Image (cartoon, rainbow, N blue to C red):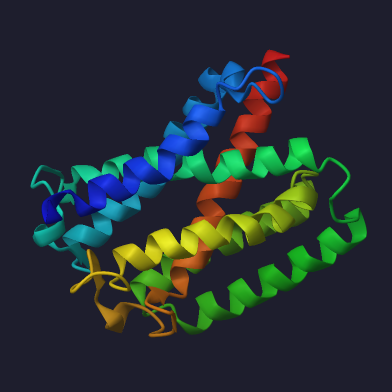
Length: 230
């Protein structure tokens, strides 16, 4: 049973939001399945390439004790599923909040200032830690995304910044489960010479930047495809 630990974590994180996607009286979110899955896969491909590179460079690795044992390009099947199932569940939370609380969003000016602060923080961390691969890539991608947000001023940030606070709660518990909070050994282990060494519980700080960049990028692509279809 221990070998199904990561797989079950993926499935149980996904199953409830997926089932609620079929609820017809309110959101009926599954109607957007094509644009949604296309967005997740398109963005996920970019991020999983970094995952593969990190695995080959031993920036991180995976504990076979908690895996079913099938790997593709050094990544376990569970990690491939992670990039499909976890973003589905996470971004679904954003749209559920948007549906049930439509009036809650940041003002445009506030959003702009938050973006500038996040960009500056990301830039400083990236520049001063260029020699740490995991930090440089994770925070660097986040910083580029914030620069694009400054340039294009996408309105979606007004809601997503708030949504991410809620999304981060289940993300924290899922990622904690992967990094050793609830198991004898971590499922995912890191070369700490390639990161800042700062942890939120057992989670490397960089994972928060990585998570935001992944999920907000999916949201942007999804909105583009959905609006294009309409």
